[in-house]
Length: 94
Image (cartoon, rainbow, N blue to C red; front, side, top):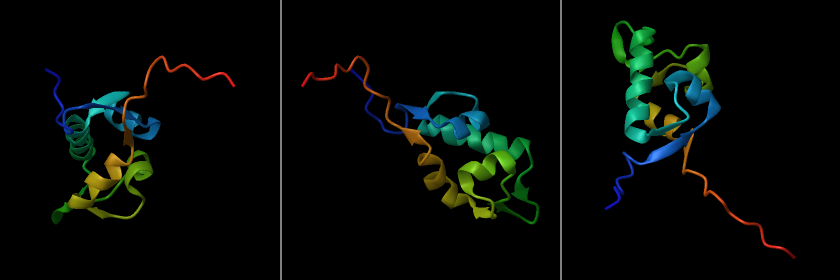
């Protein structure tokens, strides 16, 4: 039986996001974990309020250049994920 959970389904990652997480395909769940790992490894959280993120140059291509509250990250990241393309689609002849 196929897993139909939308959080664990493999998604195609945009080139900008791929530079952050290091994968071309990744589930939503794993993508968010990798983005958070990137944020923590690069110390992008505001020191006195860790809920706010200060994007660096690479992350600003995903989240924008302004500081962002942690709950807003999900929507911004999900815009860089898409369904896997359908393979072997034949074009109809006219």
